[in-house]
Every structure is written in C-alpha cells, then in structure tokens.
Length: 148
Image 1: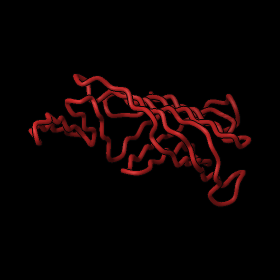
Image 2: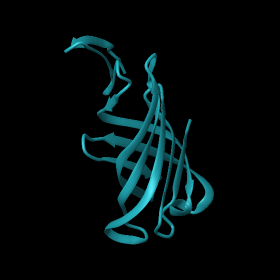
Image 3: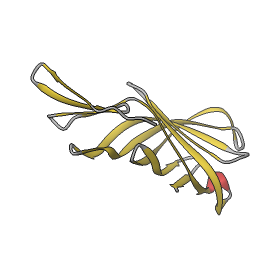
Image 4: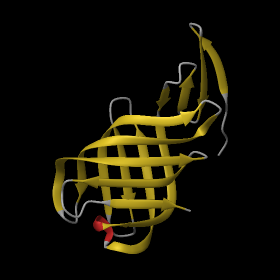
C-alpha cells in the first residue's frame, strides 16, 4: 500500500493528510476512510476467552462510524459516534479513538439492528487496527480484538 503525504496551506491552517487521516495545526484531527487489521478475537460475543483468528474493520464516516469484528462464523458490527481522538502531530499514522456505541448488529443473539449504549476503543498503528475493545449494556455483546 502506497501512502502519500500531502501538505497544503488552507486559510492559514497547515494540514497534513495521510491515508484518510488529517491533522491541522490546531491539533484537530479529521479521519475518513477505512482501516483494517488481522489478529485474535475474544469476548462474550465470541465464546468468551477462547482465542479465535479474526478481522477488524473500522469505517470512519463524517457523522457516524462503524466497527466490525468477525471470525469465520460470527460477526458483530457496532455503530458509534466519535468522542475522543488521541494522536501527535508528528505521527499521524498512529492514533487511538474512543466512541460511544448507539447500536449494533449481531445475528447470533439478536435479530436486526439493536439500539443500545456502550463504548468502543480503537487503536491504529501504522494505519492498521492493532486493538479494538467494545462493550454494550446488552448481554453477550462484548468483543476484543488484538492485531498481529
């Protein structure tokens, strides 16, 4: 995957753009696009502490975002609003995000899309998901992803 660093001057604001991640001189970060990772999945949505190979995919949209965690036979998708983003201006490929869950889709235990509350924490290192942890108020909907 090729990454291109674009530096532009927009109305006196220096902007860095790298693979959908934008940080301006006021330390405000804007992310768009998709980020993925391969690794190990655990959590109550995936048979508790039994480690399974899995995937995580985070799609960052302007108004809301989604995190999908899956194994070969199960998948859960959380819809969430971004609450906090942590990064450093000198390292725009590594960042973490905290978002508030407003719904999820999990066909194994719940039919359709279920409204709920909860939180997700996602860490991205070198533009790949290295960690994702989600939990909601509904039973058997927690998921943990650890990238490899």
